[in-house]
Amino acid sequence: EIVMTQSPATLSVSPGERATLSCRASQSVSSNLAWYQQKPGQAPRLLIYGASTRATGIPARFSGSGSGTEFTLTISSLQSEDFAVYYCQQYNNWLLTFGGGTKVEIK
Amino acid sequence: EVQLVQSGAEVKKPGESLKISCKGSGYSFTSYWIGWVRQMPGKGLEWMGIIYPGDSDTRYSPSFQGQVTISADKSISTAYLQWSSLKASDTAMYYCVRPGSSDAFDIWGQGTMVTVSS
Image (cartoon, rainbow over all chains, first blue to last red; front, side):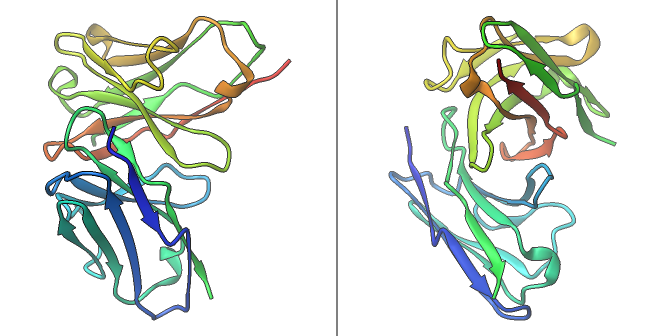
């Protein structure tokens, strides 16, 4: 099983600032990496797939990068609606795994 | 509109059986895999397993193999997740998900909350 490790667990950021979230895989997943956003009481929403492609309707302030074992989600200028929990997920093989999540909170 | 609509919240006792559902609409149900994801209270996301309704090919996470059964009825575009004997530790929100052409989960159901308590 591929283990996905996200850091930090919690990120305190002021509105308008940049947020950088990291995700590391225990072995290479190529570019088969997705990022999801989950707000309280809601189902997760796909933000990024293929490590760097924004899903339909996702604002340009969200960007993903990386390949192999190291990945980054960047939110260029945090808006109030972006405070949420973010999960990475690898889908390199059928045994899919999620990271533990990063909570982005208001500083 | 492509969507997955799940059955409502359930409250059960330990040892009882349960089957929850997920109905797909707005797309060809037999052409896409459907999976299930567990989220225990206050915790992260865990992938449980996935089924291809077209031929019922089913894969399970080792963590859930033997603990649950995933099935689908393509005649009514519905996938199922079932337990034969619930435990308190099965208390969680369960989401059905559809991987898109990219294989990432682009469609999520609204979730079904299962509470198991004596």
